[in-house]
Length: 204
Image (cartoon, rainbow, N blue to C red; front, side):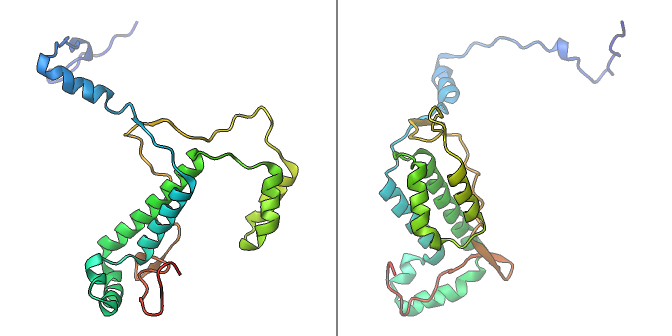
């Protein structure tokens, strides 16, 4: 049976490094347990449909048209000047992108775990019959075909619903913060980035 070659003098064989048992001091026990169990999870409060959707819409709006409060307090001319000059601020552009992306994360969490029931096939077909004019997209036909020819089996378990716990270390990386953005002078920019305030009203 072949044997492993003898390592050079400055190398260490793994079998020679058996782990030594260590006993924690009394003062080290609590910090160790905090580290060990600190990422088990946190209790989640259910996401309310109307409230969450409203917050997501505002975050998207804020990412597109947000202006520092201090600038707003100076009046319309100061706001317009900020909007003209802030396009080249890469740090601000990145922050706006991140806010938009996070809004989409919250929206996806609402869809995944919000406390509301999924539609039925009949209700979904009725919905698209009434609102299909909203979307001029080639995928709409695939949606209609699937609704017409497919159905969810009665014994199928709904994979969505309220979640009681979530680990704090769970990372959200499902959303790319440039999905609805365009490029302007090499920088990602929201499509209606910080528009002038004249002739506009809040909520319009």
